[in-house]
Each structure stands twice: as structure tokens, then as C-alpha cells.
Image 1 (tube, helix red, strand yellow):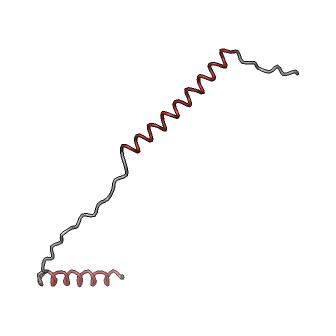
Image 2: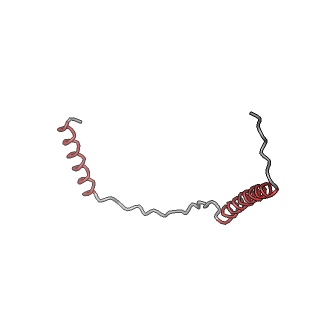
Length: 82
């Protein structure tokens, strides 16, 4: 079989060129939008803010309660085999 090459009409050529042009314009606009978005919303900069901490004395009764809790926890863990 002999193959007949497909010839494009001038109208088809201009339509294809127009499509390619529109694609390029769309890509250029997307790049410009992304650059604008980046310029508009820069990365947040973290600033260290000094925090003043209050040191409060610990009541000895709290320590005793804490020790009791630890003792109870340890005895429970021993009972279950840890």
C-alpha cells in the first residue's frame, strides 16, 4: 500500500499554532501567579521571645504524696510482673 502523507490545511495549521500559543500563555501566567504568591507570602520567621519562669517552692507534703504514689506504682508493677 502506498501511504499518502496527510497534509494540513492552512486553517488547521493556524488552529494548531493558536492552541500552542494559548498553552504557552497559560504556562507563563501560571509561573507569574506562583512567583506573585511566593512574593506575597514569604516564609514565616521565628522570633525567640524570652519567657520568664517563676520558680515556686515545692511543699514537702507534695513530695511525700509523690513518693507514696511512686511506691504504690512500683508495688503494682511488681505484682503484675514488670
